[in-house]
Image 1 (cartoon, rainbow, N blue to C red):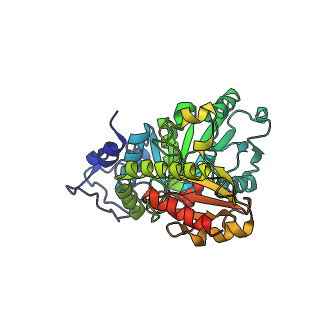
Image 2 (cartoon, rainbow, N blue to C red):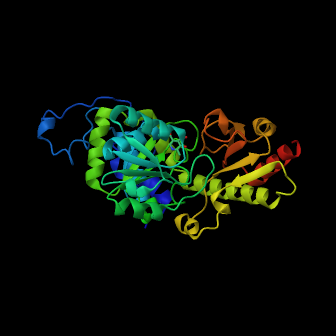
Image 3 (cartoon, rainbow, N blue to C red):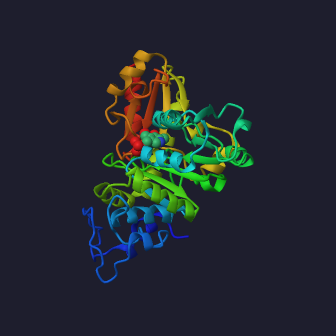
Length: 373
Ligand SMILES: Cc1ncc(COP(=O)(O)O)c(C=O)c1O
């Protein structure tokens, strides 16, 4: 199979409507009809024609189609692009329309969406730690792995087997371990979601989401729903994302290596840094499934807990190369006292998103900051 960078640079070459080497931004919201062939929308074969010829950018537009082609090419799946990660998750809930969802810990925004569905249509929510025999046909297990904020890896195959034995579906939020770090479809995921704002975007300058499905019918239904949800990815964001994808493989691999080295340094020096009471990262997990599920590296995100809330709050300001900010996945390293944006999380927890800086500088920065505690 062609490599990731080759695909991300060339897979959409055939879709370019101009000779420019760099895809231009198509800012148009509406496109001229072909007066020689005026077929009513109602008479088109929607599964093939409707979205191929640009009509109106809420439906699709040349840049969004290129994003979908590129990400589809590296995941061996059909990609549907959205205006944010939460836009993609909302679309997944709308499409699957479960009566019951089993949901694990994870990004608070996803729980916010589940709460909206509880309000709108009485969706029942249970935890993935509850008895999953309660799930029935067309219900959903929604699993984030590795999980936000602490980076713990969960066993996808285990949850896929339970979901499928009940006729339910498994949705994996794979934002923290995008390709080639993991491929949730290999372990039984039915739908995969990414906040493309994070690693695919990689420059903290765009908001986007991706849903992936192996089923062409589901792709068509999702694209059709998106017309009315009004959540297609915007033109400029698509352009930025196409730009970003050209360097994606280099970035994700470097970020993953950097994070793993920093985690290794911190865990080897626990005695020297007693203020650190906990470190969580896939590289520290010993379960067999972790190696199988993430054969090409661990998430660039990890978490540490310090001995007091006061220290956790103060620590980010002592670092030189880690901005104190929310979000993750960019080329610049970030750290967040996570209680700032997630009230359910321990006030002693710091979430670290590692960028592409020289890892020696990042480790030295951690060392000097820990020495000041
Ligand atoms: C795991 C995870 N999923 C989804 C989202 C939502 O993505 P977005 O901010 O692009 O809507 C986030 C955002 O931080 C996230 O961390």
